[in-house]
Length: 479
Image (cartoon, rainbow, N blue to C red; front, side):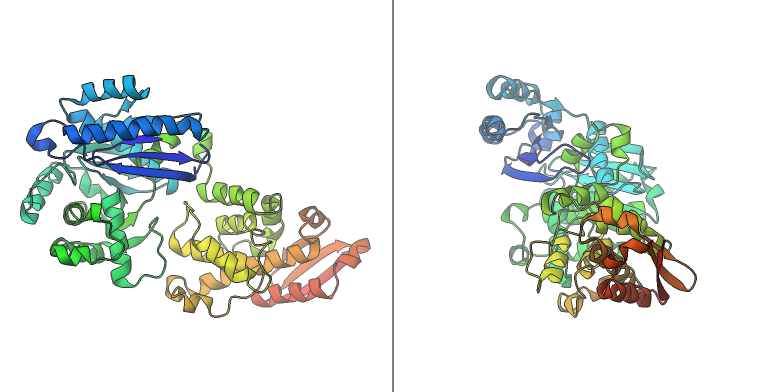
C-alpha cells in the first residue's frame, strides 16, 4: 500500500489482505507536499522531487519483497494543487504506478472504513487529521451517515504561527457542519500521526502503564484540558516531551487545537485513538460484505495461533467445550479469543510461561479489543498455565480492570487448563467428555472406559474451576 499524503509518502506492506492485515514493513518519507498550499496553490518543487525519489524506490522494492498487489492512493495536497495532475502523470511514467486520486468525500469514507475495520459498530465521528485536510465522518452503529473533507491541516499553514488564529480558522470550518453535534455523548475516533503523537505524550505525562496507542481512550474533559495546555507549550517544552519525534514538533500545537475545537463543537463524550485509518480502509473496502462481518479480534487470534501454536490451537473446539460451564458468566468473544491463543506459550520456559504469554498478548498488534479487554485476554491465557501473582500490580495495570473482570478472565483460564489436562492438547479427546454447569454444581461427564484420562490431576483442576465459580463439583463416568 503506497499512500501519497500531504505531509508524508509512505509504503506499508501487509502480511496478507484479510480481515485484519498485519503490517510487516512500514517506511515513511516526510515530503511536505501540502506545505504552503493555501499560499501558493501548488506543491513545492523540493517536496515533489523527494516524493518522486521515494516512489521510485517503493516501486522497485515491492516486487523484490514479493508484493503481488500494489495499491497507490493520493489525497488532499495532490487533489488541490494546480500541479497535481502533472505530478500524477510523472509518477505513472517514471515510477510505473497508477495512483488513485481520492476526492475529499471518498477520503473521509475510506478513512472511516479503516476505523470500522478495527472498531466494528462504532458510533460517533471518525476524524482523520492530515497535512492538508481534516476528514470527518459521522458513524452510526458501523454505518457512514455523513462525511466531509475540510481544508485544515498540519502543514498547509492554517492560522500561521498563531494558536489564536488557528483556533479561529478551525472553529469557522466546524461551525458550518450542522450534523457534527449529533455525536453528542458518543466518541471521537482519532486517526493521524499528529494525534497519535499527542496520545503518546499524554500517556507519558499521566503515567499510563500500557503504551499501546490503538484504543487508548480519554474522557472529553481530560482530553480538552490537556489539549489546551499542550497548545500553549513553548518550543523547549515540546522538545523535551518523551517519545515525540522532531517531525511532529511543528504540527502538534495545531493538532491539539483541532481536537479541542472538535470536542467543543461535537459534544463528544470520549476520544478514542485508532491505529487504523486510510490505508487499512483501502484494504477493508475490497473485502466482501461477509468478510467485513468477521470479528477482527477473533480473526487475529486465530491467525496468531497458526503462527505460534503447535499447528493451531483447535480454538473453536476448545471454546465450544468450555462454553456450557461459563455461559452467562464471561464474555463470549473473550472466551473464543482466549481459546485460539491458548497454546501460544508452548515453547516458553515453564517457570516463566504464564507471565511471558501475558506480556506477549498485552503487546500484540490486536484490533477489535480495547485496553481492558486486552488485559483480560492476556490474563485468561496466562491463567491456563499458572496464576499471575503480583504481575498486574507490578506493571501498574490493576486499576484498568475490575475485580470481577479478573475473576472472569481467570475462570476462562482455569477452564482451558482443565481441558488441556484431560486431552493433553489433543482437543479431539474432548469429544468423549462433557462439561456442564447446574445451579449448584460443575459436572464433568465421560464414558466409563475413559476413566484412565481423569486421574487425580484432572479431578484437582475440576475442583479448582468449580471453587472459582463458587460451585460444588462432580465426576460422572457412564457406561
